[in-house]
Length: 70
Image (cartoon, rainbow, N blue to C red; front, top):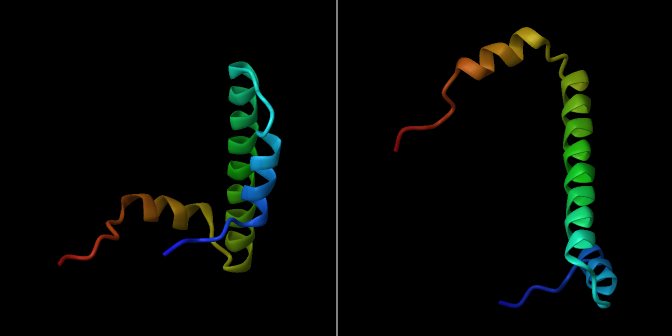
């Protein structure tokens, strides 16, 4: 099964259609990682606010085991 590229993938391919230095590639990768990690944090903050999650709940979750036995 062949998957079509999404808009983000197409834009990245256009960006990299010209030669980039190794340093530029590292910087771009770092920028993408920073952007995506910030996005995850924003979404987690929204979910915490919607569900009224407290710091105590997160602390309890750190101690729990969520794996299901087979």
